Image 1 (cartoon, helix red, strand yellow):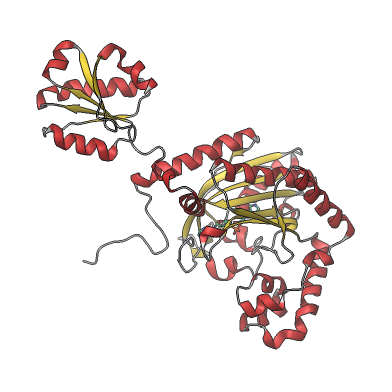
Image 2 (cartoon, helix red, strand yellow):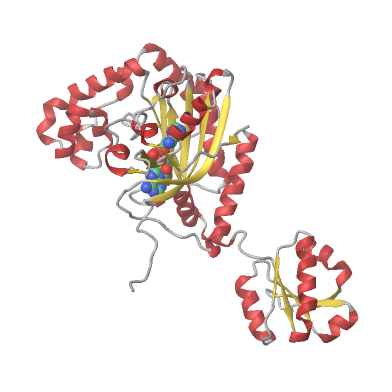
Length: 420
Ligand code: HAM
């Protein structure tokens, strides 16, 4: 039988790696809490219309990357390729569009896109995202960007760049499309084959074509040239406030994002150490989407960060982070099999006092146990129980890093470990 394997572009996250995920997630929860976000968990599968009706007919996610299938009831369903459309669907379904005020959601979880797998590009990947409904203030845009920056800082990332642009309002979109088409039509023959089709269907997609020839032709294009006065004012309030708050950013006149729902402010964070898939995260305003999906008109803004890419960037930034929070902290070893029940009692007492611990439960030499402890024990502390220790009501506390060992009464061991 051919060995069974995880599908290409999907991966197992093994216990050795999970500590880094937990660290990432708990930092994120702390920062999200500070900013007043509350978690929403939406289903991983949705009716296809949630995405086909929002991301844009010509968006690559819709045309090429959706895991779309018919379920047993004959419905067209999709494994969610992103979180925004699902959150908007839930926001409308639960009548939250009619309650007024500000609603701030966060989410973390797997997304699915049938892309060609490569470093940093997976078919099942994880996003942390936020969506804010009910404010059209430019300062809401700034606060959302500040949250993104605080997350990146909290994860210890340096060397990223924030790229910013404005895509204008719904009416401006037609003007932008016209502008880009007019600029590029004289150069149609030099565009790649895909972009020649895009020129008719959706010229904005040409701006994020990776072909060097197409990029060169787009050189002089600045989409913000085609936006209205109100949108221009909104954008300058955003950029001025970011400057005032000393958030470093770069104006990126071609940034249009790969999804069609964006309006006004759009942004992306890229990281130099990620290779070809260099976007850590991205987002922007989508003031028309709630109405487009059947709700009343509510302005909104959000972003999502790719967590696999955050881990890759962390590794590049500080490889030592790999050890964070991995495995039990204390190991209980026993000199002979007779002390295993005492060891079990001790390890349970440690856990009951909030100390992560594991114990030897096999009849095997102390030397082998110490090897196991060295591998699995992130704090490097081993508590050894032999016949004498059990008789005296003490444990031998050994620090694997220094080799030092001292006898401690069982009654005070918890206190000692909390200080260690
Ligand atoms: P997105 O730019 O499509 O935006 O994805 C956000 C991030 O998810 C990317 O910057 C990247 O880090 C990660 N990502 C995307 N595709 C993959 C993949 N195949 N493998 C690994 N990581 C990937 C959105 O999804 C929008 N919903 C963001 C948003 C929220 N806009 C407003 N609110």
